[in-house]
Length: 232
Image (cartoon, rainbow, N blue to C red; front, side, top):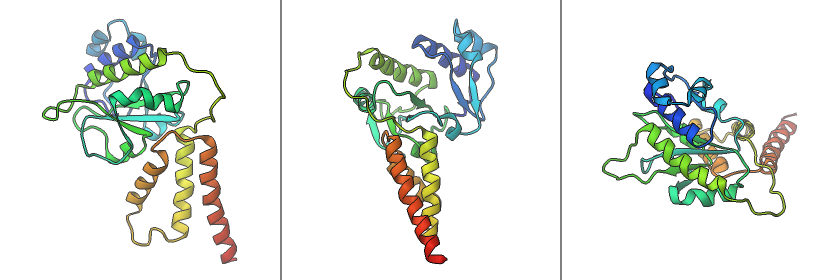
């Protein structure tokens, strides 16, 4: 998210290549790659060249059913928090075959409340409380190393799980519920933004299946249809 140092683009590209990733996504505004980026990429130039840029986090993670934000700060946001040691269990619960988007904040400020609210979980990096913030590429290296080790483990056999909903489908359900809540005057006391942020955390704060999303949208739609009938 909004990287501020071009050198970090190169360092992150190299780390990504170390763990088998071929491309990265940057949410704007982010610095462009430069000579220093290329020097630090050190053999991962193709990853640096393949960086995809998006205007918003919503667009960047739209295709991912699992979105894990990262933070070393305690007490920010109320998304489901997991420690690094809990990441293997979380990904196993979500299904090892499902793609995961790991989201890292800008170097100086970290992720905002709204960005953290879009996560399936918020991964807390185990840093010293007296010096909690990490260099961006170091944080990426730690998380990808753990995720890579998990992905290397064999996946157990059994019945295929229900397919997980992509972030774009969850966001569409949020829009549906926003219209339904407005229709029943849920926002009559204001705080619409905060209410939707809390609702998004409640719904998106775990891997959610396509069937779950269909149920949520069905309920929202029934509210809207019933209200329309009453008004006619």
